[in-house]
Every structure is written in C-alpha cells, then in structure tokens.
Amino acid sequence: MDETPPVKKVEGTVKLKRLDPWSLAKIYAILGAIGGFIGGIFIAAIAAMASSIPGAATAGLGLWVGFGVLSVIIMPILCAIGGLIGGIIAAVLYNLVAGWVGGIEMKFE
Image (cartoon, rainbow, N blue to C red; front, side, top):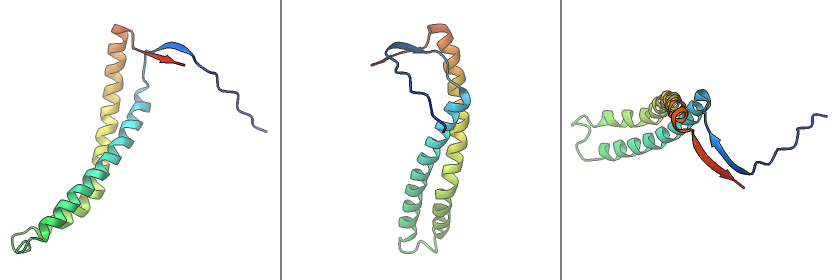
C-alpha cells in the first residue's frame, strides 16, 4: 500500500522569501482565464443588446453579435496568456524585492 506521510503542522512565524515563477504564473493564468470568460460573457450580452436595437442590422451592428460570441472564446485565452506572463513577472519582481527586504512575514497557528 502507498501511504503518504503525515502532514507536518507548522506553527509560529515564517517568511515567504521566494516564489516559484512558474507556479505563480499558472495560478495567474487560470485566474485570468476565469476573468476573461466572465468579461467575454458581458461583452456578448452587450453585443446582443446592441444588435436588438431597431435598425441595428442596417447600421452594421449585426457584426457585433459575432464579436460577442467570439469574445467568450477569445477573452479567456488572451487573459490567460496575459496572466501567465504577468505571473512570471510578478514572481521575479517579488523575489528581487524580497531579497532586499526579507520577504513577507506570515504567522501560522
């Protein structure tokens, strides 16, 4: 049988001195994709409302419906890529600054 060792309980104050850039980037990418999906839904809803305005088809607003539908797909991808890059940059900058000031102090009980 494969038994996992018991989890060691940490108590007291510890400092977060370094972040793994790839680990933080993955979290940022997932959060960006979720935010992009929510934003895409709002854009799609606004585009659908705009296209229902009388005379919208003749004014070219019908194209916005297609844009609205595509935004639900494109926004999460773009925001995930931005989050991935932003996460790497944030972790590298954190590691640089934490080297100067000692990191973030956290207390566990």
